[in-house]
Length: 128
Image 1 (cartoon, one colour):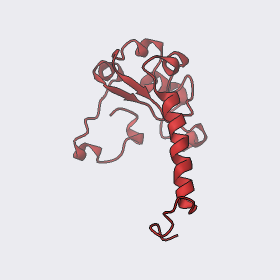
Image 2: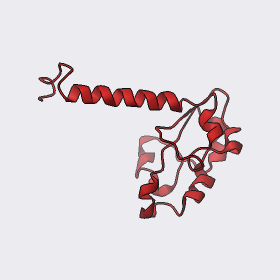
Image 3: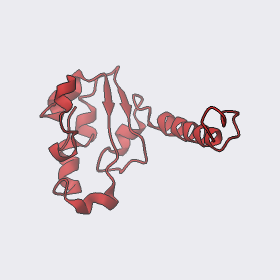
Image 4: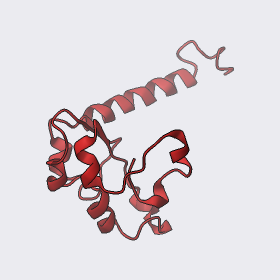
């Protein structure tokens, strides 16, 4: 796991998670490169100095894309902030599953809402 210390869950190391210090060092070893969306609208809280600094330290740009293993998977929940978490070449790369992930995420949320609204026959099990 790697990211700004202000965004890492406190105590995550106690679960056996290794905290990395350099994205460039970690990328060649990663099976999955999982990026999270930076919520620009919440950036005013000062969790890191700037979007530009975040992109420089933690973003997957063209140079870093070359460090990603050929058999690795690149994922991101979407929507992406191009130039912050990821560049367009990484988003479109053959190793990227971002579009599939976003598409499936919509279907899963729709199914959950369908069930929660009582149209899936589980209303008695969910006490609805």
